[in-house]
Image 1 (cartoon, rainbow, N blue to C red):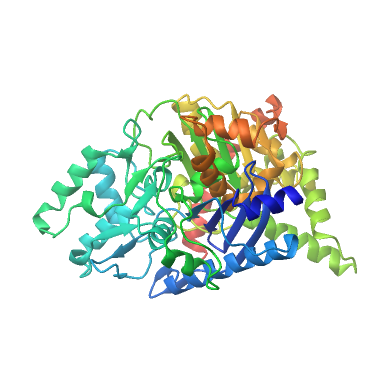
Image 2: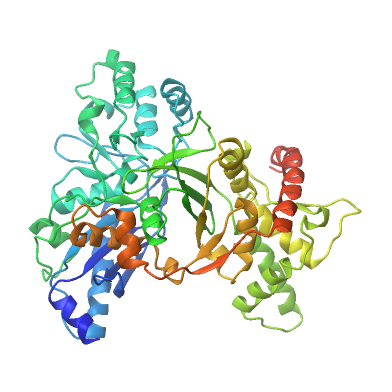
Length: 531
């Protein structure tokens, strides 16, 4: 406690703040990455005139309150005021569209990653670049605005992401970490900068519009992990700490997206490693040794915080339908006058799944609360199906719902593993799907065909991940790589709990997936019939 107190007083700390979809979290760590204090602020997006958005006033309110919550935690634990930190990093949800005019004024409400309004732009840009452009990406939002003739477009002088915006206001620097930048516009892994061929193609595409800007002029400058990204100004310090206690001058690392901070927080930045976040939605990222051989609409290409190519499989649905079934079992028990512990209920039902038949005994389910682009569904209908001869019991039922929670994800990962022959040495798992020890890992290992590890630190989240990236910038030794720094200083000796794939589980999951793909016609019919 005395060492930690001294570290805080002397500024030998790193502060990470991440603006997530439902919470803004701040984490203060020491030089070893050990969390010292934390604070948070809960918030929600709003649907305004058909656009999913956050008010920028709420951004600053949330940042100030999460920082004050952190400072209060420091005061409570160590009985000292928080006057400075050694280094600072900002992270936020990737993608989306924040456009500003020459005076730095917001031109249209923030369009978040959740909006799916750029289909026409995506189709044209993917064909033009021969590179998959997802609907969430900033360039898709900009080009869709151009196609619609939105009046704000000629006034644009700067576009950025949420992390880039906050960093700009704190430091005055219009920069972005390469991982977050890879969700704005395609990155050239060789130069670790925007793909200049595609920049040229886009500028030629819109040349006839004669806008008073060029794309290369309105994007943030790309930085990789470890590079200096500016210092906290007096104005920035006042925005973070409304009491005026925090001193300016703190060095900041490049702002990053939540995918990059997830990689840092799970030590998944080395080639042939990956991480999977499984909760309400699920996405997996695999660090590549090479580029993909062709364009796949199911695979997004982004980068690690230090610029290595990463294949991302992103799915909208994971545990929502599973949670709904668990709630039904809870209600059933309550009707008998029993009040089960929720955690115990989940653990008991999950462990039943391990006792089920490897192929789920002929049962089938779809967890589609919303559509899944990977399987070609614009809308979803949660479904459970079986033939009269299927083996219907609790064990098979639970195993079916754990399998189907990863069905769309496995469809995308199979492209990487089976078609592109991508090697995966290990996957790091984090999120609610892995809360019951071993169960979620066994199912994921069967889906991926690779060992799946879960570390205790994985629960610290993206705010911890961006704190580690800030620490790397501030305390790395010479040309030390991010991979070496994390391995040497943060995760040394930590292996977590590892589950290797069981060949029988792998074979059973493959049999289930044959049924899963054949049954997608049922899901499509349900979308048509169940309005």
